[in-house]
View (tube, rainbow, N blue to C red):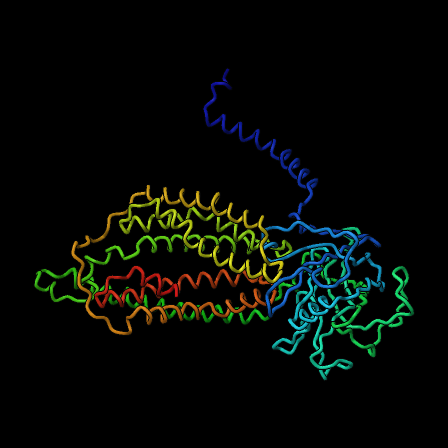
Length: 585
């Protein structure tokens, strides 16, 4: 009974002592659970251990060219085919990239170096024309082994004189003859019909078997010869072993014999670092130079904005607030005279709100996509993952789009929020969809695998109308429901007459000036992005990209502030569209 009547503080002390006694047992159990737990990997990026003589599958990906940018199916050309074609399921990003992943006739076994004959193909006239055309268009062949793309090894010389290995995705389908290549006729197309697969593997005591950490391909053009008639079961090639004096294989030939050999090389590269050579983007000093160049522009603009805000505005506001007589107010000029017109709604207010809402959608999508890439969720091992995530995020960011558009439209005294919401959800996506459809028709007319199938079209439309559109309505409802803050000034009923403006304040001039500096802040990083897109390379320096995007936003904001201030000083209060178009240009 005495213990039951103990004070609350004493009861707490007893509870703490009891918890202290049980903590070691809880910690021991937790450590036992941690010790017994096993790590997991994301689907598609888990390492696979191969034992000796295990079959290593090679899949064909696509044909691509940095000249035409039209992807084609690997089997659209007269290559060797397996007995049964098996197509691998692709995600949305892979389909939009034009990837058609299928099995191949190449048979590769772990640790077994050997020479093999793939097949002999007799070409029709149409196949000769197509093959020669693809060689002239500089097409490259893309294969996949253990989720690694086939690559051509290159040696780049750095600025300090050192040499570094680099990978170029795929290998050349063929080449054009020239005087510098022995045994070739100038301008004649030759096809690479012999492939050497150099497979790099890594072994460690921490796991059984071997792991593939590199997949290099060396392509050669060899005019194979054989004894007598061609025997499918046991052909007898007289051009083996390969020699430098063998003539190359013309693409305009009646038949082509395809061969390949496999070479296994041990590599100290760990499985977790096997993508480093693919993702190498050149010297980092170029990116740092881009960042420093952008920071200089930002500091320059920040100084101008600070000078305007601290000196000019403070002085003008002090003088304006010290006026005691109305007659002195009439002598004022500049931005102070348009304070009663500065919040007047602009023309095409609904379109301005729609544009701002769509910009919010793109901005949120960009931030989240780059953040996910920085955290490693959008690994290049997951092919098409970045494009898929970007499309899904754009659709899901309908709420910020509707909210930003509705808040802007409400501040511009708009009332038709349903029409605005429908315009925000359909205007710019519809324009992009029309261009997308026209490009898709062009790809379809060329027979390219980049043409989106009808099923994917339906899926994109469903994402647009069933997900994005309702989310935009949700955001618009929330934006219109929230009350606006009181306006700082009252707007006159009669608009003030705008005096004539100088040529240097014209819209075209301010757009040109306002667009040059933000572009100058990002053009170096933009060059790397465009090179990755058009040259079929990987882009994975998202840390630099995040910094450049932040600098771009600051630069655009400061340019809009500076040029709007100059415009208001000349008593032109039509600043809404000018503020958007200045940095948007």
